[in-house]
Length: 385
Image (cartoon, rainbow, N blue to C red; front, side, top):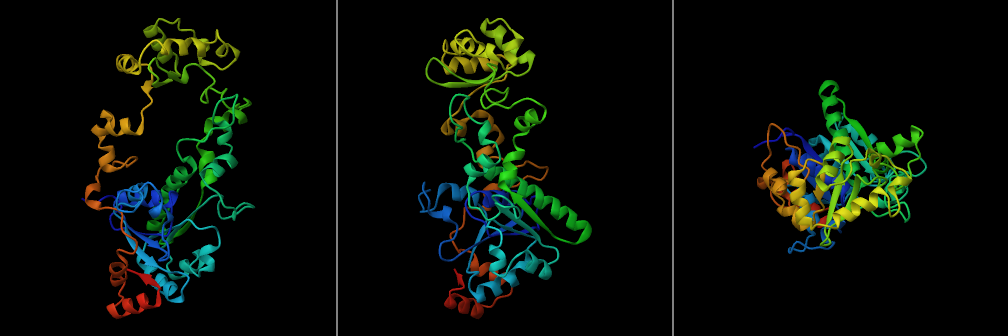
């Protein structure tokens, strides 16, 4: 079954998480994605632990399922020539090098747009293509810190906490997909491609509208003291009698009232506003914490099933895999975060992640390279596979 992006061809030069996440999403929606890797090492994530049992990283498998791999050395003149011949067959290029790297290789945006006016070129970087930090190295935690997002994370009386998800990486990946889809739509009208400049730092910043909105609106967004960062009893995680955890997010008065009535607590609406009344041994947080310690997590799950009050268990990865909601939606058969459309995509038919260079010969033959030309490229070291 074909997806809504059937017929779109993507050349993916990115590594690790953000770019491969973006191109996996495009693949899930039906695009053909060819992963171009350096023959010397390729995507670093391939060999990092944990292994899936075949020598490749289990996360690499998830991020690169259904793609084809081409091993091509862009530092060799022969490799660059092959690339320039190949690119004309693609609608989208995705890369995650620092600004200027593609130019130094002779395959930057300005060079490619002259050869292929309809190319959508997406560059995913830490800080974008311009600005004083454009050449600076970094990872997700750095981008969250510079974006001001990390400063909103963690308790008020301790250091900012390392998040359990890579919000800047994933946020950047999703903005890349959005930008690519918008550029493809525009190309239908104009015939022209576009450079999509994605900053992971800016992507992270955009994910914190409440924190920055509160500050701009005149409220100081203190870490751990705002409504959505741990400042109220109604929006907290609580430990249960048996050491489990529950997440309460009863922000609206009707949900807080339902929770209070269910546990025998006076539904005082002051609990929905930050302030000194939330803290201390007599504060709302302490009162609610004491209530949660009375029951096991299983008992609280039963309570949540019977009471409409925005209460859920904090699941481990193992529990999430077995969760009835995710199983009913086919999340782990289709891929977490998959966009369901009127035209479904049969992900099971897309195959596993490719071995490095597994499809080099196939892709080059499609572009018109003969077996003799392929053998010459292999001998020169410009390609592998």
